[in-house]
Image (cartoon, rainbow, N blue to C red):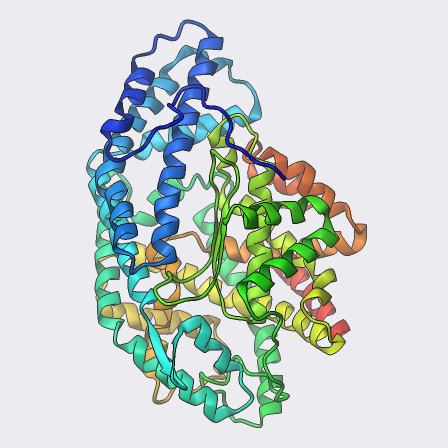
Length: 569
């Protein structure tokens, strides 16, 4: 599809942002504009929204380029300049714009549900804003960037080649236990070199975040962050109930699956280098070789689902909005970054030729399609939906694409194995999600904790949600600091329980898919056009899903996955 940026109505077409002074005049115009009618108010909102989109996109590209190569000093400097010099005055003046909007008598004429949600977000932003937090927020962003740089530099040399952690992880699935052990120990030793600096970074992040919460009148950072994330539809207690449900209903199921694998191996307990290997001694699945092949096969799969979905990824390929392969210096993880002005998002990931990479690309592809579907909404705020809504699209795409994975797996046995491993991974990741989320709650409820207390709490929570089937003797520090790999703790705190919700969505969308055939595609194309113009519960309800992750619901939906697994055995 042919995509071009819409003509701007307010910001200069050739604007280059090198300093805050380059955009100050636009904020001054908005702050000083006289608004004498509802039509003028609506036009003022559109101009403000356009400026927001321009700034968001400028920041996005700085972040994208920095994460693609954390060793690129120019990219790092451009990102740091925005964080430390450009964004602080923008944060202050944006709060003034929010107040002008909220104080306008014409806001009462905004009666659509979308506008009510928007106003609620604005009200929350005004409530938590404090001038003194601008500098603290910049410091946290700099520390998060430092974390990414450290992780991106973690290489091992194996068989004469420098390998990133994602590239090396393929060897942890090798049938030869000695190869797995050798590579694991290389990774273990390399990561140990950074434990002290990562602990120091996290200590600083906890204290900075706690101070931000105190400045804004909150008891702890967790409560502050829930307000900042506009979690209007569920509470802290709901998170705790989710943890309890995972412990009661998911951990026993996953432990049973792991015990069956352990019996096949013939080991008394796993060693940490056994956890990714196939118990039948099968070699790792190889769904693709290169990032280009991954892209083309994903387009083929999406085309079988819906031509529009394929066009989205094809457009991103043509515009070079894909950076998929793992390489030296690349930040960890994967993401779909919305670009609100052009409307074409960017997918970043660390593909190394594994079956997990297939899941990642279709998942991020779901996010990307969601971005395409919402690119023509009036206001940038409507396109910026909460992660709980975003995960509904991405998780649905994971499941719906499974019917066409023969593009990646030409062998029937490999196809069946890929589906089975994916369904098992859903059960596996839920306890980890509960572990990370529970850990975050404790961290910020107890900001004065020592490192020793943090380590002990991590071990306690890990035991709660673990199977007890792995022997870490000789690799104890790998267990103590296993949370270091979770970038969300460093970069986007409390954005993690959504991944648990997405697994729950996976089950529900599976029931919908197999019961109603192609209805989920119609839901995605129709309802996801709405972006964040409806509340979360309404969006889920329109997709045929109740926003309920209670113990009873978790139990019943886990049974759905078990039924799927039994059919694949």
